[in-house]
Image (cartoon, rainbow, N blue to C red; front, side):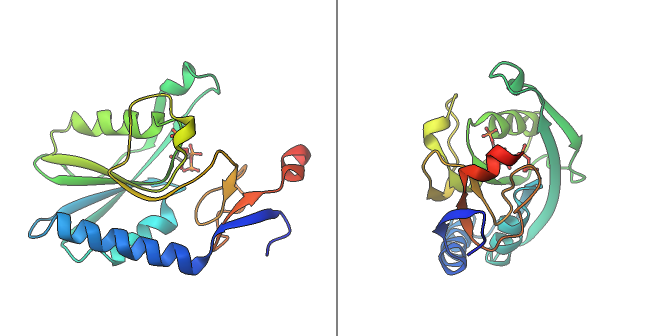
Length: 180
Ligand code: PRP
């Protein structure tokens, strides 16, 4: 185990198995239809890559990068899109994919933004759901795992830009926070 990880929450095998299940569920739910998958970088990179391989439908893949500025609850409501999608999603089924839903502000803001472009539908898929932190009514349509209010890293999730490439999802040691 990585020296900065206190506890592994989900192993590579557990993550893979759950992501395959989600892909199969999405395949059934959208049977006979096409899907535009919009991945929220950077965190969703590994989840998106694995998930889309297991969606057995015509899929177009696009990426969006956003950042929330400020740490307060009020300013975090403002989302700055630094890289927008290229696809025209008007009249298309859109699946918005993220690594984690925490406060819910990111998914709420991006869903609202994409709604203005008149897609046929928008659903959301997240690997992790930290439900205890929610500040709004957002819920993802597809959830890999519910997690406790701990700082988790790996499989795309970072701490100050580090640990994204860990193949597992684990809880970071508190001593790591103290150093930064
Ligand atoms: C993280 C994560 C989600 C968002 C969830 O993104 O990837 O997009 O926070 O938090 P919320 O539900 O409280 O809005 P971050 O802004 O850290 O960027 P990253 O994807 O590049 O890590």
